[in-house]
Length: 117
Length: 113
Image (cartoon, rainbow over all chains, first blue to last red; front, top):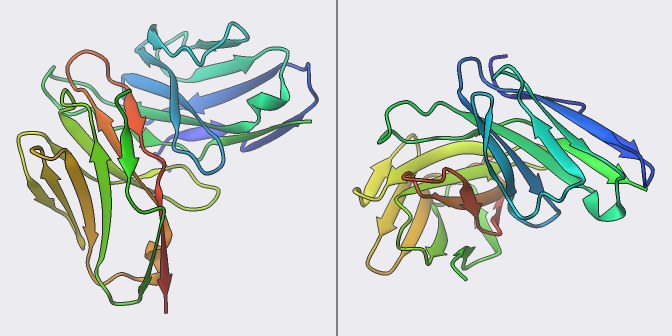
């Protein structure tokens, strides 16, 4: 399967614990995005990388959240001191942005469902 | 604030009917629009996209129409099948500058056999 993959698919944790999610983008995609989705809502942008550089962060990304893409390939999203309000689906997407005027179609992974008890 | 939204939260159709899902956007700076399909427990799946210099684009059984005058986007699905049942999101992107997607709330499409 050459699509975006995410691990784990489900995570249950207790409030106050730290969790880390991994995303493997489509091979050769230079952009990688993290979104959060709660029930009944559309995905909300959190942050994105172009290669290893983190270019934008949403105001939704509190200081408890940190994302990395150290080698410009896979990415990790860590949430420290989890809260019940962090319960959501965390989605990763990737795209290939070539020429400045080319479209930037984002392809999503299956998501990681986080439940904070 | 500027946002992407949908007119109908739920659309119920019979198998074989044509479906039309609508979306309104308010950001005139948006120049790229995408429709995604999301089945329960899965990530959004790309369906079709359209750039702002076009008003219509066709794919396999799907057509996207863009009316920039009234800032309206629609997804037409021909000969709807039970496998089309899902939540459909429109999303907007500003291709120049930031590359983040702004999603609407979604429309649930229910197809009865």
